[in-house]
Length: 63
Image (cartoon, rainbow, N blue to C red; front, side, top):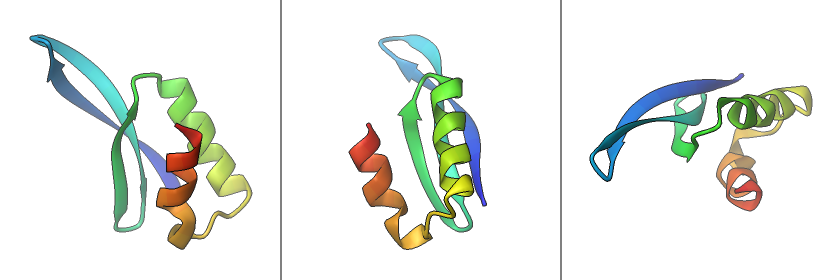
């Protein structure tokens, strides 16, 4: 199952909230600063049962 993970990072001296997506032991951090976009991606991956072996490629193609 794909889930959205929230992180804080400092960018140009300011704290910024960014979102990544996790699936099992795989995690891609800092995909977007837009939670809705990250959630839409995770929802789509779950809906279409994206195989984890394609996770990195699909995220790379989408951003």
